[in-house]
Amino acid sequence: MTQSLMHYDFHSHTYYSDGVLSPCDLVDRARSENLQLLAISDHDSISGLMEAKQYLKQQTITDLKLINAVELSVQTDFGEIHMVGLNIDPFNTELLKVIELQQQKRLERLSVYEEKFNRINIFGIEQATLDLSTQVVTRSHLARALVLMNLVKDNQQAFKKYIGKKGRIKVATNWVAMEQAILAIHGAGGLAILAHPTRYPMSNRRLTYLIEEFSLAGGDALEVAYPSLSPDKKAWLLQLRQKHDLLVSGGSDFHYPDLKWTDLGRFPRIDSNIPHVIDIINNKLKV
Ligand code: AMP
Ligand code: MN
Ligand code: MN
Ligand code: MN
Image (cartoon, rainbow, N blue to C red; front, side, top):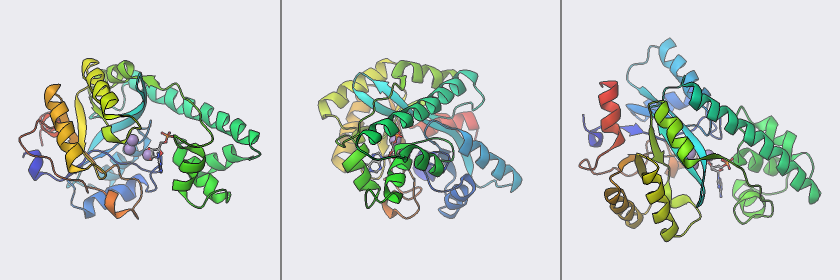
């Protein structure tokens, strides 16, 4: 079956990172949306997908296939980016080492946030954030903690005022480097996908260079279908993918059930004549 006929979503989150649904609830939601293929791609974690796999086994669910994935935070010359490793072996030791290190870096980053918030007389953010996290500590948890502490009215304001690109508190993190991330994903038999390319705070020119570097480093695919992407930008990304002979992927980047425009499975279709990661995955899975 070609990708245009399949219902899939190759980018989603559970509460093991900054999603709000449990893996079981995410699976239930995917089935109610009639998805056939779902990649759970938590930030620096595979725990959600492992739990979801157990659930499929226990409930003998056969109408939905899970694709093992992870969304790594990655350091590049152009700033921080996100890379989805798709169809990875979740038992690969090298990849698991990278994931563990990333989780550790997130805890260290949180301590630095505490120190920096202390300097502006805000105390206890570290513990409040840990209390809200299941496993991977993200800035979304920090934002929720700031809301609970009545310092901001919602997550958006937390990013704007404190922890976003232009916020008061900046903490740099030394994430895994791009080449290393691609090697780890390939070593685990997966495809390296540049997630939501237009969401990074960089100019089109820099993004063009980033995509070139990504391709030279062995990257496999670009996400060219996700909720906030305009048709113009999509066309532009498709030109770049052609230039560098990359595959394409798509996903909703689902985090919350109450945001309709980023609901599971909800993103524009991609023309079926464009080489898609799904073709490779289907061959490996023998769907
Ligand atoms: P982290 O990987 O811990 O730095 O957290 C990044 C996560 O925060 C992203 O995956 C988004 O889910 C979320 N995020 C980033 N920027 C914003 C924003 N401006 N408003 C709301 N959520 C955001
Ligand atoms: Mn997120
Ligand atoms: Mn992301
Ligand atoms: Mn994501």
